[in-house]
Length: 469
Image 1 (tube, rainbow, N blue to C red):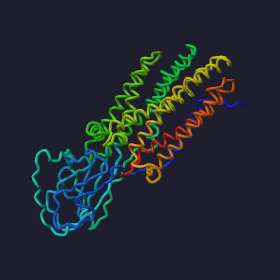
Image 2 (cartoon, one colour; image 1 turned 180 degrees about the horizontal axis):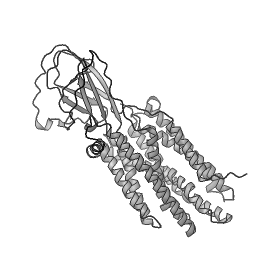
Image 3 (cartoon, one colour; image 1 turned 90 degrees about the horizontal axis):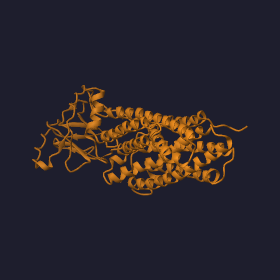
Image 4 (cartoon, one colour; image 1 turned 90 degrees about the vertical axis):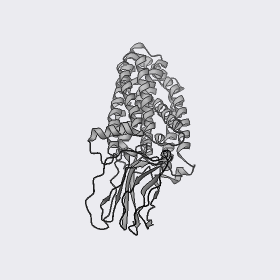
C-alpha cells in the first residue's frame, strides 16, 4: 500500500529531531577566558597592590562584568568601579583604595563578551605584609581608564577562616531554545524565498498559487512567532548576567539592550521582527508585502551574527557578520524553502487531477532546485570563510572542542549534499509519474530531518568557545 506522508508525519519527524537536541546536555564552555592578571594568580606580594587588572581572550562587556575581592575570612574588600583600560579592549581594572592586611585574598570575576556567552572564575594571591598601597602614577587624561557605572556591591557576610569561595553558576541560554530560534529564522527566510522566487518560477495555476500563498504566509507567521518567543527568552537570560541588578527584571533587560554590544545586535533582530510582521500582514496576495517581510528576515539574520561569535570578533568584524548573514540566507533558501515546499507547496496541488498534479509537482521541484543550487553555493562559500576567520589552523578541527563540533557539522552537510544529488537524479531530471511525488516527499523529509541535526550542530557551535591562539 502506498504510504502517504501527511503534514502530521513530517512534523513528527522534525519533533523527533528537536527531542534529540533537547535531551543532549548543553555545552557550557567559557568564552572570555582569563589570560592573565595583576596581581598574578598565586602571587606573593610584599605590599598592597594599587589595583586589580584582568586580561581576557575576548573583549569583555562592562555591563556583564563583576569583580569581587574577598579576604581569607570571606569578607568582601571594597574596590573602585570596574573600568576598561584605555587602549586595551581586552582588559578591565578596579582600584584597591585601602591597604590590605597580610593574608590570602581571592579574586572572583564574571563577565561576557559581545557574543553574550558568560564565563567566570577565581584566583588567589597573598599579601605577606600590611604595607600601604603605592601611590598611583598620575596619567595624562588621554590614558585614563574609561569607567563604567556599576551597582554598588552588597557586603558579604563573615565566613569561617579560609572559606571556600565558589563563583556564581553560569546562566546559559538552553541549547534547545537556541535550536528553535535558528529553525525559526531559517524557516522564515525559506518562506520568503519560496514565495518570491520558487512559486513564480513554477508557473502554477492561479488558484493553486493563491492557496499556496495563504499556506506559506501562515507558516511564516508561525516561524516569526517562534522567533519572537525564543529571542525574548534569550534577552531575559542575558539580563541575568548583569551583576547585582537590584532594580528589577525590566530594568536589567533595558540595561542589556541599551548598554551592551550584544543588546544592540539583539535590537536589530527585534526591529527586523517588527518589519517582518508588517510585511506578512501586507502579504495577502501582495508581492510587495513579501519583499518587506524579506527585509525584516534579513535584519533578523544580521542580528544572529551580531549576537554570536561574529559580533565578538576584533578582526574583520564587518566581514564576519556579513558571512554569518549570507550563511543564514543561503541556509534558509535551502532548508527553509524545502520546508515550505513540503508543507505548503505540495498540499496546494490536491485540487488538480492526477496528470496535472504530476506536471505541477515537477515544475515546483525544478523551480525549487534552481534556487537551492544557488543557496547551497552561498552556504559552502560563506561556511569556508567563516571557518577561516574562527579557526587558527586546520588542526583545530580535531584538537579543539569547537573544531570537533564543526567537523561533525561538515559531515552532516555532506549528507545533505548527497540528498541533493539524489533528488536531481530522481525528481528533477526525469518526467514525473503518479508515484514520483511520494518518493520525493519521503526522501525530502529525511533530508529535513538531517537538516535539523545540522541546525543542532550549529546551536552547539554558537555556545562553544572559539579556539585560543
